Image (tube, rainbow, N blue to C red; front, top):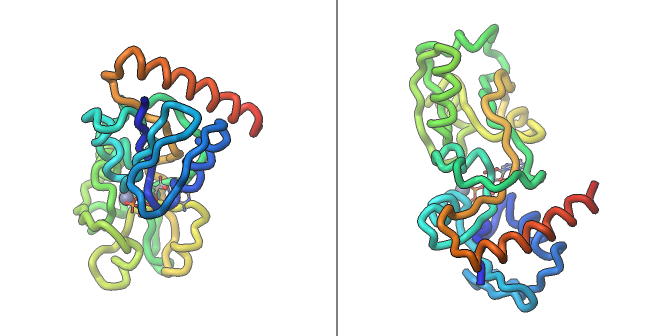
Length: 210
Ligand code: ATP
Ligand code: ZN
């Protein structure tokens, strides 16, 4: 039996569950249960917060998982990557209030930037030679400029409509992300075999979608 960790409820959940279903794998999904055993494939699904998925897979509590690259790389666990899955595409971007006269990333030197992704942001700023004060907050990052916490934010963007409705404009792209399949490095031979079977089905689903 292989154990997969997926997001319990959020932007990755539906596409993760749909992928498993399209692989021809059946299961009963009750929103109250934290775990469900598939009925026609040796797979057990564990429902977690996305932030916890890389750690659980690294520790071997779950064998494999589906998570956004943004979370995976932020947590320094990119070595768990098996392959990109092509959904939940988004980007991590820097944004400033619409009225800010922004010319280049150097404008952020000495400024306060609010984000939930301090490591990804720090790596970007280091590469650009910019020194800023990073304020790590766990949610509602887009309100930080409005309440005087920061002059800029670094947050996940897909269409950009959340930025616009908060009076912000996107000024730099920091990181491009999509959902990835990750796996524990210490799978038993038996589990690796199940993973190979699952990957075979995933590839068939992906070919059919194209
Ligand atoms: P949890 O409660 O599990 O911690 P969360 O609130 O941290 O959830 P979500 O907002 O559900 O996370 O986003 C999960 C992942 O989906 C993100 O880390 C990112 O990879 C991706 N994602 C976020 N926003 C979008 C979006 N607008 N479009 C597509 N994918 C997105
Ligand atoms: Zn999360």
